[in-house]
Image (cartoon, rainbow, N blue to C red; front, side, top):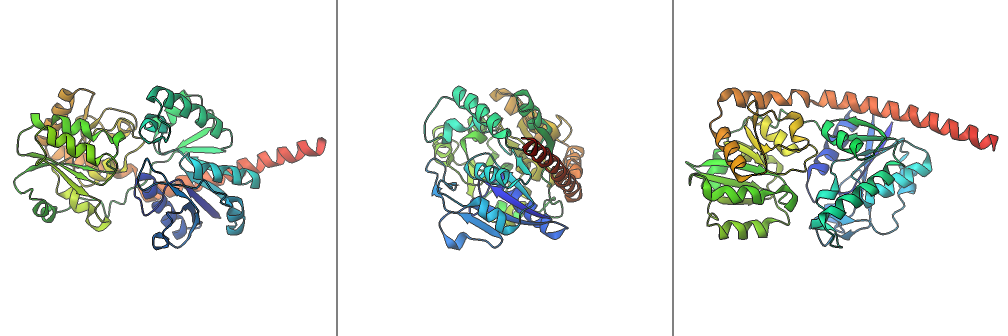
Length: 389
């Protein structure tokens, strides 16, 4: 069975959606399925990868690294030529919309994974600036309209499924968490990274992920002056919020304790987790957050926001500590993480038992089989109805 993976974002950029796409493609092509990707084109042929169909796109000026396929892109023709049996989109914007419409016309199953719920961050990246309140309302109107064309919706967490249902999405929804390779993400020696960034003798909080406004790293920087001077924040990744965070750290007099490592190659990523004493995540909009799962897999107790999908697997006092909205809450969670004993670290590692590759593939297999049956029955009813007319 051929699966067309349509994605709103793709390499050379890197984010959680792209990480999921990479895992899906690799695992599906190793098993009884085969998969090909349809993605926006960065315009640079050096970025092109095998097994990918690129759609001509323009750079999104409000978010570096993202491209939007505003041109006519022949997605229907591409799906036909690849012999796609199922279209499984990752996202909800232009590329996904093209894939959904094309697959619907072809009468093949339409599956969409909602990795993000964009209303919370539309204020940062929309070309037309609108208040957050209206951005959230408009996004839900759009999601409900898009959902009418989708056969099965997938979410990476139960919390996200609940939020969709609470906002009027009546589709069949399945929660399928993104798996984590625990042979790669595991406790690792980070001495070399500590030496590289002059972190010897420091207590290190490590934050991995896009350095974007919705990640709310500013909330962590805000409390840095109130932490002991041997505590540093190591920020791994790049993104549009970096200049403002650097300015914030400078204004607070903690620029020497907020270390921006920038983008790091995959082969060094686990060493960066290994360089940390604890993980930290202040974002209140996560629908899964692979980087927190990676931190747990590496044995780090994580201080994170008591919000959305993070609550699906983070248990306060078990594998880390949750914090509310106030700076005092953040400080208390950080302090508890630094004082956490080995049982917390072992619990962190055991969290990943539910995120195995085998479990993920079994859920995908059932999803695709059920989608085929569902659409076949739907098409059969349409055929009978047209004959009567």
